[in-house]
Image 1 (tube, rainbow, N blue to C red):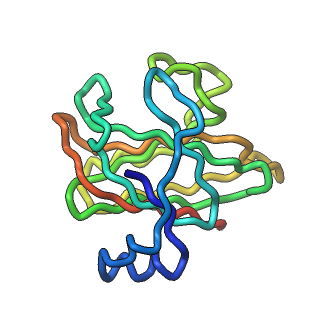
Image 2: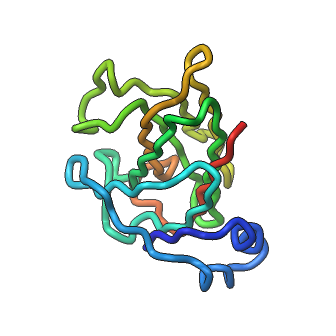
Length: 159
């Protein structure tokens, strides 16, 4: 289940999992290739569990999709951390109609494949020139294949 966490609870979550009591469940806003897509905001912290819905990429890694309205955001930092698996982040422009092939309007903006197997993946993304990022899609997954799953925390901050 996906949860929105207040800023103070996000700090507490890094110390203790008791902060989940302050969270609210997320509801999907759309679907891409059968994967639900959840809306999140810059400045928020979100707890979720890879594998809870059984969504897998072709390499059998667990996947969740998030959409971010970055129309008023020039730069953001995204962090995904987990104690249970090595996380991986791909941030792409727009909202893709499919994950099976890249299109020019859905180019990758930033990625941290986390091949070193750290407990945290991080990306920084900036709008071109002085422009905003616009609508972006975050693909949250495990860095390695074969069904690695577990809880994770996403934090989004302005640069």
